[in-house]
Length: 284
Image (cartoon, rainbow, N blue to C red):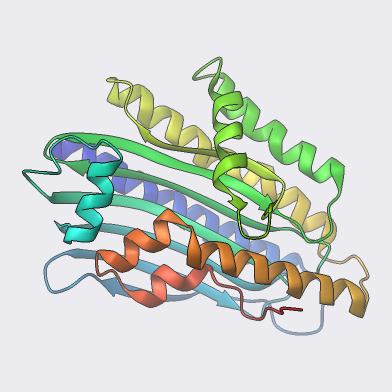
């Protein structure tokens, strides 16, 4: 399992590198008089010997108002609250051995242009002495929806799923619809995508291959939408709608998101955990 963990962590980091390069290239092609945005890269640390990662954040670019692309590889002992949550989900061994290892990539992009959709993507591997599994997914969060953009995004995810499981897209789309729902608002935070967690079919290679396929699908699913919308004219009313929609995104991530809760409860760098929050938001 050590070799498998290393393979997963290495691939997540390579994906992080490719995405940041692609986003900076999009910034170079973006319209506007200001300079193209660049990522600020900061190493992160989980305690003195619990691993860490890379926090990459771009702010105030031509295309991206704020985007974070983080990679991490952390290990240690779960705090009692996190341990109890894992045990409640049926993770084997949590009652007797709370050690864990986890690695993954997490991405959230908030766009300058209200016509360009915000987006989230992550893939990860989690290990305990009693089990391992993969999780992740991607979802699109437009404040002004274009049906053709939604269809393109879902088509790419559907194709990524199809090669690995005949029912994967339908299962994981339904899971995303449920997971990315905001109960106290009675609505979804966006137009969905796919979400999966606790994926352990018993075949590590097959599950890792599927997780890689989800990560590989992200840029073809999102970049054409961002590039097409980033120069579209918008009004103050459009910007107002964008800021209100960002309020929904912030509420969801702070109240319901598993990754946010896990990162804070296991002592990871708080700035890296909360990089998903928008730079500006509005509530009515």
